[in-house]
Length: 299
Image (cartoon, rainbow, N blue to C red; front, side, top):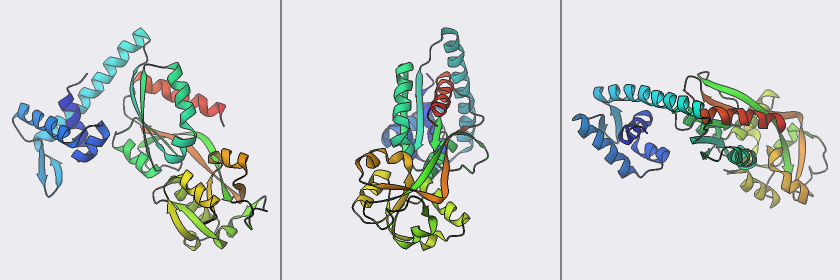
């Protein structure tokens, strides 16, 4: 409902990047540039300084950015007030989730939510935990669901469920005979790791350090960006790894991989993360409540 030029400007000002704003708004970069120029023509002044491929807000730009934030808050409050009276739950929600959660937890949750609230449009951005937290910090997404602890104390973090991570090996591997695997044995075989910034990787490194093992001693022969790619590499006999037990239902059933609990056990939280102070639309409140209930029913 708000002025499109102002919405686009606000995104660019928040991210200090035309490219990132275009991605966040699902627009082309030339379209973003055009909208900003339209607003600058309206105010008859520059809103951004553009030097050496970097941009910064001018004094006028800072004023517009400050007022734009308050305008959007008022719009959201107005829409919520009307929808609470009418009982309508609708709008657009932008979620972000780390890869494991997006692939193995959210499809059923969002499917059930969509059945209950068909007028709510949900858009999902997938990244690693580091990327999702950054998107929440920069107001690119309304809600993030992550698989590692969040260090930023200015964000609200709600625990959803506890995930168990296990060692996985192909059948016939020397470790496949173990029912409980001493963590030390992870250092004895070629290891396949998630990419830098992955919540899974971060949790494993912290776990090894806490039990007195040096994560640098892992014989890392490959780094891959998704659980499916890693499982395929393990099935092919390239190496072993540690992954969420939730990602292994199909492989365990088909007996293409063996999942072995670690000693000591390794668990991590799946958590919701969002801005503490950000005004939340009614659809967002309903999604949070729906997700809390889902986590209780699927511990």
